[in-house]
Image (cartoon, rainbow, N blue to C red):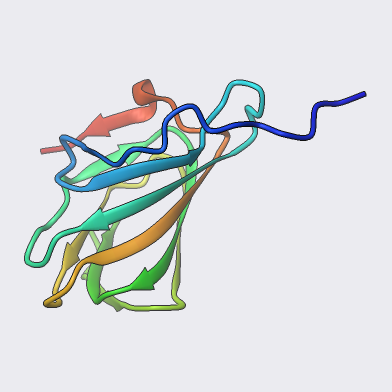
Length: 120
């Protein structure tokens, strides 16, 4: 029988070099097809320009931001928006509001630190 429960190993928020805060909700070798993290960007902060070696989706929960992908002009994002970011696409997000910008980040396959490529 296949295991149907994966317990989170660490649900503490941590700061990243990307200039945001991450809480890993699901990122376990037992489920290599997907990972899920909650991301928080402080007001006025722009994350580091980077790309990932995985496909990614940002689902905006709260706050206001300006998203930039593939060197294109930034576009506004807010609660309920989903940003689709194919693997290898340059990206960064700016919190243009006065409160935290919070979004869920889904990666397929699951995110590993070696998937992160800084571009600054």
